[in-house]
Length: 315
Length: 315
Image (tube, helix red, strand yellow):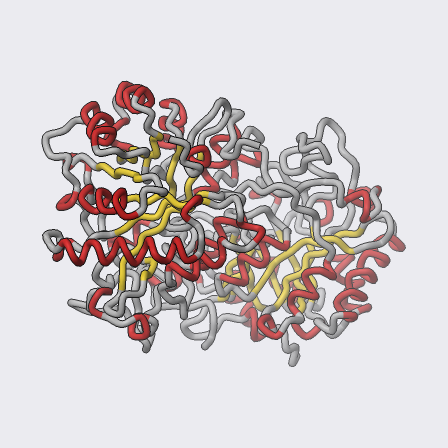
């Protein structure tokens, strides 16, 4: 209802929006300032990112709750071993010891992104670092799809969940970027807290049907995603009933037909599909007429949109 | 013989060098400052680029002699039509009207690089722009493989060739970057001029056997490359006889066996292969033990080198 964020993500005649997933994970290390800066330089003005908090309450941009051996090196440049610490167990200063600049090519996760450049001495950024970048005059058109990652070990801990939401909302408000931020999660309880605490930001409901879940090498979101027993056709109504503005289905969940998309449209939802990387899948999502495509390969999506005479920006 | 440029390009135990081809053509528009800056940010310190001159004698970084419809838009943002002007017929100011920020996905050339991001309002840079960047303290370790493109219409024009070489050498000397520059060409007569005019810079001899030439959508180099009737086994001796320091064969020309590489090594030549993009070809070049790999996908090469326990830098 008059949210200024919605037009930035909504499709229009000739326009399907393009969102850089964790920056541009296919090209540069995910959730890094380097990746976000690259994505912005390519004219992609919608960024998806993941946020959690450190032991000392700093909102940081990273996906997995536990530092992950396939993508994190220690202060000596060695891949992490066995059972590394959780982000929430480390202070921000401790977290800055770790290097997230590259993937281990021999890992299953590393093999998923064979073209990702290998950098060194790259640190997990604070949410505040990215927000400061977006306050610059050149980036006034940039909007965020800010995913809040609830800790699977603390799902029943209401106070922990509210502290996390509070930390994120407080940073966004400090930077005065609420009009350009959408709060996004798999955890619908957490989104209910977002709606109560920050009603000025739309709530974006991620869904992934259990039968299609296959994100090798990543923290699972299944535990917090209340879609068991649903089909794609059930999801728009559930998002609308929860007061959501965005529905973000996993692309494989809506591949079969476009009926769920029509339902979403009729309910006034903006539909953002994730994470669409293969050319044939990108083309299929274009054919379905989604509002926005979230991809690890934004350059590839740009080129496929242009081939159809479409664009990712309205002007 | 004591050239300071050679160690930067020479392989060593555990090291195969990595050269970003036209920046990183697979990721960002070729021969642009945006592409070079990206490549440097990924820790790749060897850049290949193409240089020719405008009607008013400005050395500019671009590959084809004629502005190419598949990669150049006019001031109104439209793809060029039919017979566009040659770079050498335009002043630098006129050249700046054209936008080289993206590829036409419907063209044969555009289809070769489906992941290249699509930018707008990107200009053909001056050689001086890149040299100024490399004078910055952060880039003191960067070296250039600077290809000089002789105009196929002026092959017998000695004065034109010398003016071109003179313009390039003068810019490099003005920036005092001779100790970090290698002069590179398919045109061996032009390289002879380079050797006379600028003996402080190694000469790098490009070769491509006619039977393997297949660079769709690009200016051909065959007319100026004196390799007719040769096999790969003949080439090192010919480069050495011409006083070259670098031999740069097309990768398909040396795929069969490693004998030509041994010959080159015995003759004291540094062997740089181009342009190696497919994972299996990159792996084959690693197996052959070339000194350096020139690729449109430097991130991909980084990852494949690391998988073998190799690196592209000596430290």
